[in-house]
Image (cartoon, rainbow, N blue to C red; front, side, top):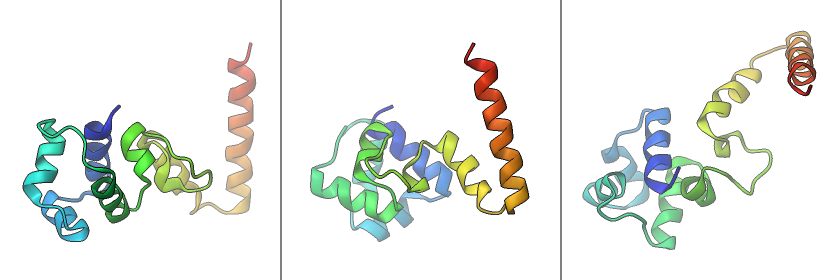
Amino acid sequence: MGFKDNLKAELDYQGMQLKELSAKCGVSKNTLGNYLTGHNSLPSIETGVKIAQALGVSAEYLVNGESLAQNNSACLPIKFRKIVESLYSLDDDDLAAVQALVTSLQKRYSH
């Protein structure tokens, strides 16, 4: 996925409207809309960083869906982020059970 798709996915995930993002990052709603439609496919680096900061993710994440940050769930792909964020509400016993399940699945699919 590219910038347009990652931006759209992040807005959807956060339940944020363009108007709110515009207010947070100082980029006009029309310009943000152009990024989402592909009319203006990529922002400048400076603008991309402002958008990323307003969303609480890295610029790398918006560009390629990945991040250089290793322990920041906000920079994970959305399909993994929901899982990781839900783990924070589990107690130690539940976390151990999840780890056991993951280990079991890894063994199952490694053959």
